[in-house]
Image (cartoon, rainbow, N blue to C red; front, top):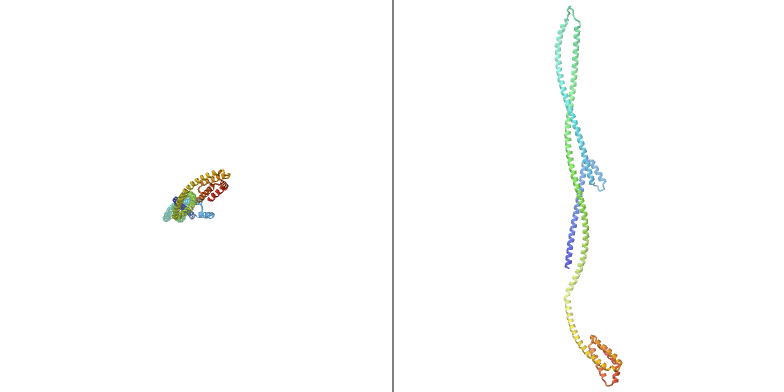
Length: 438
C-alpha cells in the first residue's frame, strides 16, 4: 500500500509538471503568434507609408490589396514597392538635377546678356556723352558759323568788291564757287545734325529698352537665384530623404531578413513544440490510463483494506471462538487419548478372545467342514477388528464376548452330537453376533 501511494504521488507530480510545461508551450505559441501579427502590422504600416509618399504606388498597393485574397500584400510586393519608390525618387532627383543644370545655364546666359547689355549701355552712354559733346560743338559751330557768317559778310563785303584782275577787270567764277561750297557745307551739317538726332533718339529708346530688359533680367536673375536656392534646398532635402529612405530600406531589409529568420526559427520551434505537445499528450493519455488502473487497484485495495479492517474489528470474537475451539480441541484430544487407551485395552482383550476362539475352533475343526470356513471368516473378522479398532464399538465387543462365552458353554456340553449339531449354525450365529455388535 505504501509503495502504491508513493507511485501515485510521483505520477501526480509528473502530471502537474506536464501540465505546467503544456501551459508554458501554449504561452510561447501565443507570443509567437503575437510577434507574427506585429510583423504583419509593421509591413502594412510600411505599405501605407509607401502609398502615402507616391500616388502611383498607392494605386498599385490598392490594386494588389484588392487582387490578393487576404487584403494584405506580401513582403515581396512591399520590397517591390520600395524598389519602385527608390527608382521614382531617383528619377525625381535626375529631373531636379536636369532642371538645376538648365537653370544654371540660363543664369549663365542671362549673366552674359546682362554683361553685354551693360557693355552696350556703357557704349551708348559714351555715345550719348559724345553726342551731347557733339551737340555742344554744333552750338559752338553755330556761333562759329555766326562769326563765320559775319566773316563771310565781311568777305562778301569784301567780295562786293570783286577781285579785280591785273588789267583791272572782275573774276566771274569766284563768287559762284564760294556759294556752292557754303551750301554743301550747310547741307552736310544739317544731315549730320538730323542723323545725330535720330541716333540720339534711337540710342535713348534702346537705352530705355536695355534698362527695361536689364530690370527684367535682374528680376529673372533674382527669380532664378531664388529658384536655384529652392532647387538646391529641394535637392538637399531629396538627397537627405533619399539617404534616409535608403537607410530605412536597409534597416527594413535587415529587419525583414531577421524577421524571416525568426519566423523560420519560430516555425521550427512551433513544429518542435507541436511534436513535443503530441508526445506529451500521448504520455499524458498513457499516464491517465496508468492513473485509472492505479485508481482501480487503489479502490480494490481500499475495499480489501475495509474488509481487512472489518475482519480486524471482528478479530476479538474470532479469537474468542478460536480459543473456544482450541479448548474443545484439547478436550477432544484428551477424549481421543482416553479412547485410544480404551481401544488399546480392548484390542488386547480382543486378541486374548481371538486366541481363545482360535483354540476353540481348532478343537472343533474335526466336527464339520463348515466350521473350518467359519474359523477362517471369524479369524478374518477378528483380525479386521484387531487392526481397525474404530469399527468395533465397546458395547458390541462386550456383547461379542458374552455370546462367545455362551457358545463355549454350549460347546462344553457332554453330548457330542449336540455340539456337532450346533457346529453347523455356529458360524452363522457368530457372524450375526459380530455384525450386530458392530
